[in-house]
Length: 144
Image (cartoon, rainbow, N blue to C red; front, side):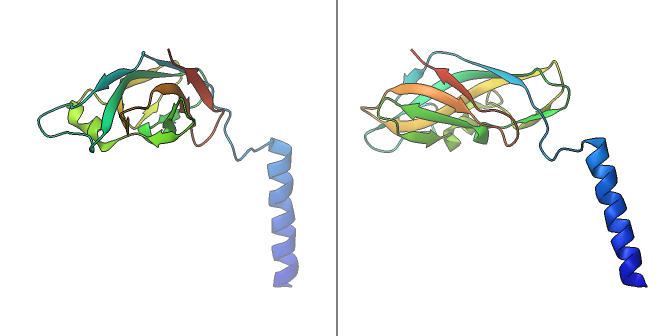
């Protein structure tokens, strides 16, 4: 008897979910703007790149053009160099003292902005930034 009741409840829930059009992935729309790259051999007295490396700093703005909150995060941003090597943002970002790109929920119509730092080999040049949120579409920004 309990098995039949469980089956009926499960089928009813599946019917409700399919009728309501529930989706596991929200439709997030964002626009991303980035400044031209700026290259540095140090950022602060406490922040030096590895030997034969340099820092690349960008100002990044993510605007939520969707209808739901969007979680912006520096972990969503990747730098690709002219040789197609990818780099995650560097911890030196946090040496920028309250100017760094935040990990924050952005309401519809609002934006998150700040600086983000990458560490790349000294002979590398930035080619593009990729913003890839957990949900939604990837945005690629070509750099000069």
